[in-house]
Length: 330
Image 1 (tube, rainbow, N blue to C red):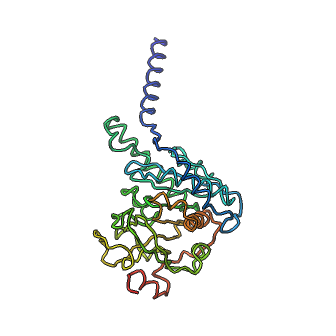
Image 2 (cartoon, helix red, strand yellow):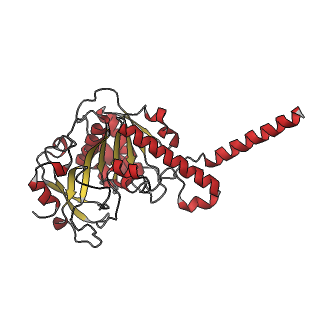
Image 3 (cartoon, one colour):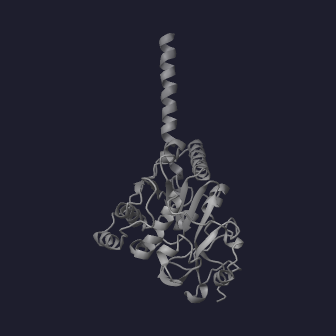
């Protein structure tokens, strides 16, 4: 009888391991390698110095997992950000889509998390893989994803750093606190990857803007530009740094915002932590534009706490010229 009980116990244990293995999903992607041409372009554009000297050795986690659309520029962006950390000495980058990195004790070992073109519930399998999982396994995977995003929210709220690039706002739509933490949710891109756009430096004296753009008031770009849902995006919560000027950009259809407000980059204080977001990062060439690499660098150094910058929301600042510019009323 004891032997039978032992055998049954082993069976139950193995069954438990099997169930655990079924939901222990780690995202993996068959991205093509970055071409030699793209590598050369990146290396030629890399900054050689940080925006400010880091206060200590900084370690950042770069995540680019996707369960929806996957940007072809992800490997290019990963490589550029990794190389920029090495070329400037501003940080060391760990590039990983392993969900285990979002456990609290592991997150605590990073100064900042960078979400590079994540989409949807990014630690979940793509919906095309749904049939490979039972109802129970899928439920457990969703619970795990929600718990890990809760961990990220807690990490930032308690003093960590977060940087979102491009489709980081096309992620975690059903997680209200994520939306507040990232600052907004994707609501389409009237300006697609081939459109000519004019980006206005809305807050030129901001600590994350002045070292990057200097006296540049606006610049032209070929890039996909997002518009954001009316909630949770708000100038009452965010410090807007860059915006698109629709009057000086290609004429497009699909614009939804009645206020004509199309922000491109912002910062915010989230609890005790720091958040920086830029919607630039769809096209490959963004990651070998020298100015935009410094834009990313400033964002990362703000998120790590090395680059101190004002996070007072735009609506609380008396800058009428900026408000009129944001509305395309110049």
